[in-house]
Image (cartoon, rainbow over all chains, first blue to last red; front, top):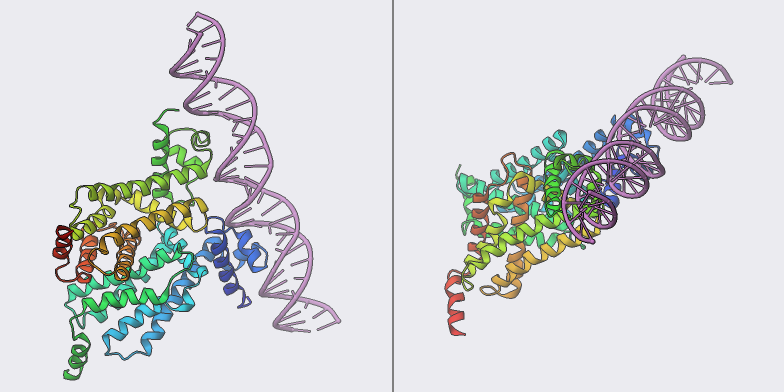
Length: 202
Length: 202
DNA sequence: TTTTTAATTAAATGGTCGTTTAACAAAAGA
DNA sequence: TCTTTTGTTAAACGACCATTTAATTAAAAA
């Protein structure tokens, strides 16, 4: 099993979805993008369903990797910076090309009626929420942290959703400005300082 | 042409999408939900595409009607109340059942690759934005109004999107609380008063 | 080099798709 | 009532679908 084939087919799947839509992304079209025979999809993924699930997994993994990378190089005690890192990871330029955004939306819609994709989507959604809540709890009361986390998550997904239908795609800078602005108006005036002093006191 | 058929088929389409997804919503399945023959779809809508477009148009029309109704019975000079009316219309209980939300999302995803649906979606999106901007301009500077309008629109769509994958569906009360909270933190402290006094002075 | 295994494909299969055609039923008009 | 129009359907059509089979090519092992 050449290690090249799987990523190659996943990329071809995204191209097919980008240009024809999930509806018309048949194994014939996908394999044509990959320059291989249709039968090979069954050989590597056990069927079209397996390929689609792998493709969605790939999109979600890349996204959460972008978040993880940014969190890793952010001061563990700078709450505001950490939330901005989470947001920034969700608007990482590598993830914002049309191919990825359209695939993401197509799968979100598909997940409603596909248990495998549904579970994937849900796990990811919960992880985003809990990352946000974890940081927010250091500067807000727990229930308030939950509330704001939901607001930020809705903003992220809403901007992605609208970006999928905007000719120019997602405006990463504007997106982060909207969310940062939301965040700053939710935090107490000196939240950054308080978070730091809490740490030094413990 | 019995006037009953068209709405009947549109409703059947939403039922099919709700329970099987747009992918598997074939004319056979849709017509079975409507209790008629598959051929009748071509007779009334000229083809499956016509039915899908009519269904999307129906969903979007119902939504903007809900907004219009609420705006009509709101004081034209109470900016905050008017924005809340727009938001409330987008979370009207009549529009929030699974059938409608799933159909909405399926079409949003579909619109990316279907010029007819794309145009529909885009017109609606712009109308929401301009309704919001119009009101916000009375209490905020124009560019700030545009900024906040985008934030509110993203929150609305993001909450719908996330609601489509939440087992319990959209929590209308929480949704409106999140957006109202956002709005109030964006407005100057006495925005309501200022808007009113502007009117009485003109 | 020969043999064996792995990767790939062309072709065939059964199924479902959306649409069309031609026949049938029901209602409306004469 | 008889005729004509309208609404509806069953059946057939060709196209495309995902998947399987058996044959072919390429790589690895002997």
